[in-house]
Image (cartoon, rainbow, N blue to C red; front, side, top):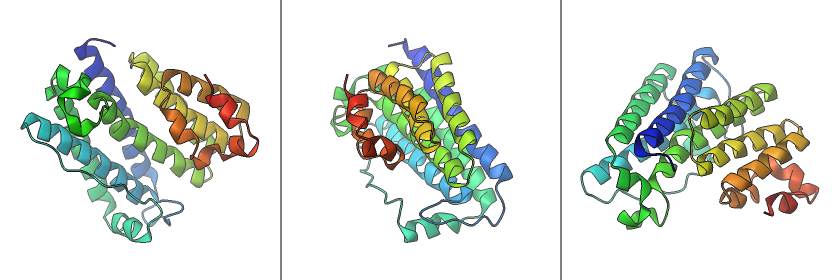
Length: 240
């Protein structure tokens, strides 16, 4: 584990990567882009990502105040009502909100104490999870995964693979701890599998599991990896 300054630097670097990709997407997405709960348009996708980041901001703020943060329920990504709510927001407001919330999240990471980020026993509501990794989940892994899904769903598999590969390279460049690099490799495995590049996907998935064994639970239910389940390869790839 790097020292706290290096850890915060790595977290902020990954947050910035995902946020920049969101802004780039919104800059080129059609103003009246069609979309659905099965294939999200850019504006609702970024609005959804921002909500998840805002929840993490609220958690960090609660820690700073010595309070227990609220519980946030699971989100049904296939919900038509949920999708309509995100899609109704103006694109410029979504872009501004994304920038603002990312800035707030970065500020909270700067302010967070080393023990709070690293020691899950300080906060029972974390249920054994490390806070620093939860920030990366909400601020990088989750949004980067959705961005990849966007490009895959809109006929741009090469862009999805390039984005995920950039995430892996950035996580390595930043010296990010193994569990977070495993998440980046997992996103790459999903993008490669959806693009039909199964041998490369298998290599990325093995790397992901080696760095972060917890991703095995996701892999067993992830529709992006259905090609491996259909060919009975998945369990072999998930075995240490």
